Image 1 (cartoon, rainbow, N blue to C red):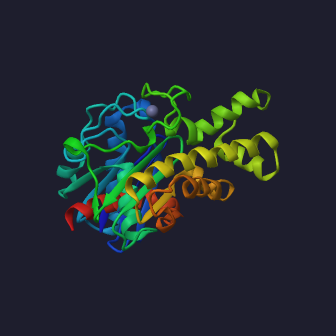
Image 2: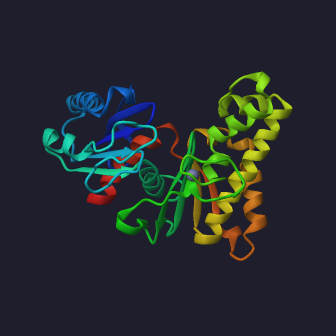
Length: 301
Ligand SMILES: [Zn+2]
């Protein structure tokens, strides 16, 4: 039994996952980042003790957390969605208390590992996982191993430049993939085009598109186009066996994924792009928790 902690900007999921990828226990609390790292970890410890009471001791604990972070020391960097948590050490907080080894992974890498072992990319050699929600992130698996860059760093797929004259991104570049194709980007574009309708989430825009709203349909078309451009870069650069997409925005993928795939097939003429399988993530709402558990299993099994 693996203890699993999935830390997001809005909620923290804590649970137990069996080695076959089934979830034995799941509870959630709000992240409330402003209360600070020690407060959040106090809640995580309490929830983990409840899991132990219900399911028995853990073989280990896996943690998925937004980056930047050091996956080996467990020290959190300057994470946009977790202001003030910089320097917090996820490993130290848990390993002594639960007498179990702890493994920490960037949340997109963790989700990639779960998808690779239990989901849409089982049994392949090369795989890219993309998560599209408020931002865009991803993880790369090559030759059956999680790809890490220099000094163990996590590549930031969402900050590849798609349009150098595009919107300014918080990373200081212009027209990053994330600033054009994330849920936040969809909402910002819609707000600029139809300010009279007030701020709307990507999910609300997709609902409006289904009802035939003209602006929402354009927003969805634009999403397919820009999502496709970033995917095309990844297919040309890596020619993966499988490219899978998860995250909240992909719940509406039926509205724009076909368009995105058409962009890929149209642009990637120098590689056998038709051989890359492009899927929506198959793990659903438990993906985050499964990612946390797989982060531990991948390192310790
Ligand atoms: Zn950026």
